[in-house]
Image (cartoon, rainbow, N blue to C red):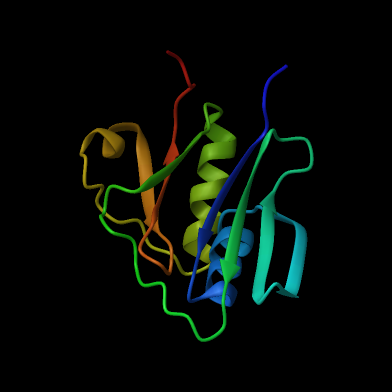
Length: 129
């Protein structure tokens, strides 16, 4: 059995993150909650994927920005048409690529910074080990 992964992190900007990850990256809203033990949140991803992202916000609590420019989520998109479409969708939504902290990611990918300063790499390559 392959485990499923939830990547969870807090944010001060839940609505801005929704715009980045839904409108820009194209993730789907899988679930959301309001006032659950004092937190609001949303889960984003794809129905069949073995992962999803969860963003939470605790009203009145300040989280701050990413600790470094090298905190990354990397999406491997080997198909040229799909990769080009996602990069174009990010830019059409108003998100410009940024230079990667590690130049390796600029060789085959584009990096975008979310409203909290965390980075998403759209890597035009297959994931191999």
